[in-house]
Image 1 (cartoon, rainbow, N blue to C red):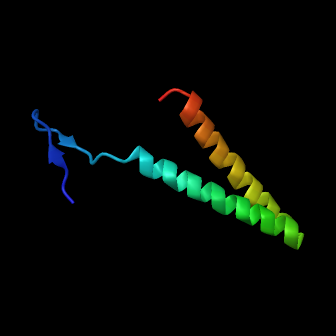
Image 2: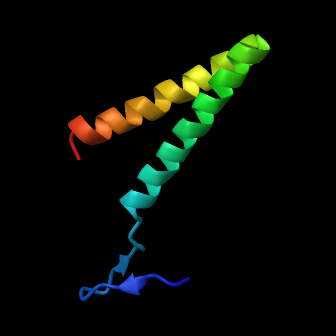
Length: 70
């Protein structure tokens, strides 16, 4: 894949889709909630830890995106 050239001759990187990133975070949040539930059901401390940590990370990303600076 080649970069496009801007009128001044510099290279323009391809645009990333913010919606795609948000979708990925939402799907990760759903998977993390599932891992957290499996950890509680199976009494697995490591699964609860990583599921909870992932939930916190996803929620922090979504809150920052909603209320933080762009």
